[in-house]
Image (cartoon, rainbow, N blue to C red; front, side):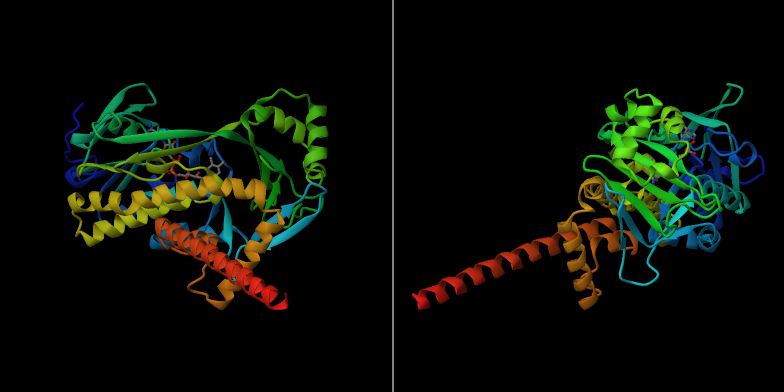
Length: 452
Ligand SMILES: Cc1cc2nc3c(=O)[nH]c(=O)nc-3n(C[C@H](O)[C@H](O)[C@H](O)COP(=O)(O)OP(=O)(O)OC[C@H]3O[C@@H](n4cnc5c(N)ncnc54)[C@H](O)[C@@H]3O)c2cc1C
């Protein structure tokens, strides 16, 4: 089979075609965005169509969607449709080891909330929208097994085991953390790549509705059971269940325990959650363990022929709830740059790497740091005092003192700029505290000298 572009089955000029490997969250959204710009798109996904056979995502059942993701969905007219099925979470509900709870709002601004959405439903909404976009064709059961970066072509294995090579003007790797397109780029000289695994993994558990059909926990919150070195979180679903996720050291998650030992351990460590999880022991035994990886690479493009978006470019750990949001922002920024370059991919792709790579690195670092904050600090007095101080400063100086969490989750300030601003503010605060302590000490010494 040839990788050279030619007229496709619908007679369009495949010379301008963009071939996207991976019809997950980023791939399907990018197909919508490009289709609306009149760019012909061929979207190839390794799985079968989830709208026919049901969705099997293999990862978190629900996700927190925030401002960046919403901005990208708005660009293709999907924000309202997605928000209709979402559950807003206004803050964290901290569950302490004795079963007590405390609510911490995410923001002092009314209406600021992150939104719990179903991964499967969102993916299917995006697939419907991609299919309805002019010039977009989707092929399922097409697994990318190789790519030719210089030809912007990829080879796909089909359901019957045969392969087909498809080329276009640009090849997009939207095929997730273990991207086949990226792994082909990794063979090129001067392509940087690193991956690091967390010592913690995750396992999901279900909290069903109460007998009267109501949510078993307050639904407008992201629930956290911080336990120093490990934690459980729970996000609400539209069917009034919660999906709980244990983030534990892998050896603890994988250690064989009988059902009685599981229940006994949970009664001791998560006492208020146990009565809400009737199927706890069986789910703990049978639900799969997931691993958490941070992947960095550079550049995110190859000449003017290949580009990576979403987890293919930057897989991050989920503790800031930003992986999908960053993936959607990639698509929005890429398309804005394409518009700015008058559709010229040769100018767009290097600009995309230059703009987005620092942001990918920043959110990867922030997500790792937030794991420590969520599991070890959110219940501590020092953390609460810091959050209170941040809120007071934010009230006094709403623009100058926007807390880091708000910059990341409730604004479109580039991640790298948000991190820089927060770091500068932290240094300033430390210097001011230091100066205040020195001044007080000098004044105290002076007063003491006069007394003596
Ligand atoms: C436990 C957990 C919780 C998370 N929670 C959040 C959250 O709350 N908020 C948030 O913003 N993010 C969250 N994330 C991150 C989020 O899931 C990812 O960042 C997001 O899915 C990235 O989208 P993507 O389209 O780049 O990749 P994916 O969603 O992985 O999609 C890749 C697609 O490519 C397909 N594919 C793979 N290989 C091939 C191939 N060889 N050929 C063709 N197709 C292929 C796959 O089948 C899939 O459809 C979480 C992640 C985890 C693990």
